Image 1 (cartoon, helix red, strand yellow):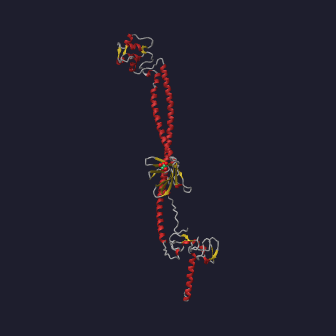
Image 2 (image 1 turned 90 degrees about the vertical axis):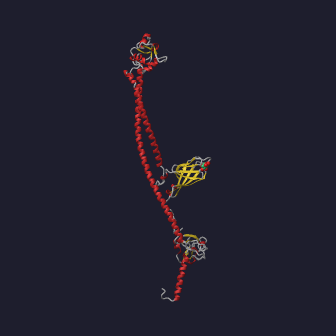
Length: 479
Ligand code: MAN
């Protein structure tokens, strides 16, 4: 192109090329890439709001023609104009066009001060590097938090499975205990029936024994008979006492003579216990000469001598039976207690498992933890999914609410917890607590406030509340 031209011609051509570059850059200054299509060099320019058509060389001519300021994107002519800082290497953004060439560097690429005396440096590269480093740091931290979150989710999954298995085991134990209980109760009913029957038999036998003309109630030992006959309690039985208390077997009305009494005492007028056993006691036991007045039966006779008495002795077997029944009742009580304990455990576990621990059960790991924070004179304690308390310096513990529900907005319900129905506040409402969950590396209680009387707000930090998408504005995105 330049080979055949004279020097003068060349100057003209160069000047034309430079002018056209200059004109072009004048036209496109202050415009973002996406708006460039409105600024194609044609004969005329249509204001972007469509309000007016102007010759194209009036664009960026430092005179405002369009109402929307679109004809002066690269000058300060329009009051509502805006200038686009391309800021290559950093963040692009708009500034009000009034700041163009105002002597202050607004765009980091210095493009807004193209005609001012201020020597603006292009700092976009440095800013971009710094921001990228920052974002990388944040991304690393977030990545670490999300890794921790994943671990906690996995821990939650394991805990959930364990609890389910525990529930199944408890259910099995409960079923076994239920079977045992059924058996023991049946056994108890059977025993009761048997006991009633035995008791009736015993009562019947005693009645029969008492009413039988041949079988009588009898003292059991020589001592008791000796004591009974020894009216004056002097440790011996005299002839008088024998005459007063004894009578012939077949004739109770007939009194014994003194001789008969002396004979019964082995020829003595007075006998002690040992002589009594050798003499009168032997006569009484044979039951064929004398008996105790007003009494039936043969003192000291053996139970098995009389079938009725023998039946009455079933009291002993009843006693043994009763012992066995007592043992059975103790067994029943033991199984009932065990069943009760297992029942409560199942109930607690079911209650625990019915709680909403998040879409991935990511909050399950918090269930058995309590987190504390001291704020002024109070120690606050949050036991997630259970309760919130406030302990004062005097040691008094006040309930700030029991687990209620998740309380975040519908699109993110798991960002707030509500604890309600705590201790009533003096001349105020019932204490309630709202727990705000925030993303952080550690799981800890970060703050407690009481914005209005007895209404508490806590911040609980945990990696579980971190979200994978940290919404970053791209370094080159347009506003
Ligand atoms: C206690 C605490 C406080 C509360 C007052 C209300 O001192 O529970 O947090 O504000 O009672 O009387």
